[in-house]
Length: 119
Image (tube, rainbow, N blue to C red; front, side):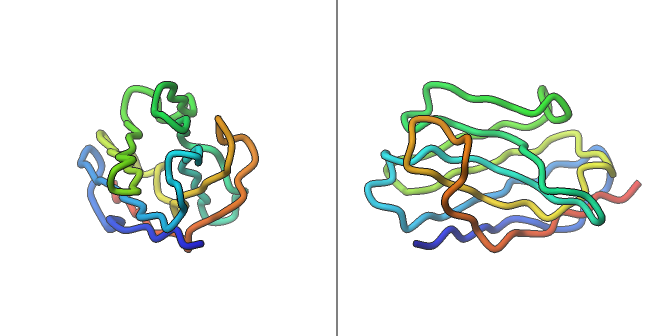
């Protein structure tokens, strides 16, 4: 099983980034997906999750209204559009998956992609 993130980088506050995660999970539609992040010196925290069909989406309060999670079950991908980025969004972002309706306990993790937001 592989989850491969891409799209991280260095941006200025107020700019946008789009993260993508390509999954080798089969069938992809059986898996709930999500994004977590870990900032230096902090624990990994939940960012966003999307159910198997994409019918329900949840966000951490800190990103609500700025981030959008989506999935394409025909391409085995999940994305995170991040707008109005803030320095406090700086972290390593991880794609996560679980064979469940909703992602509460991830079974699989990607290697992470660094997002750095400068002020």
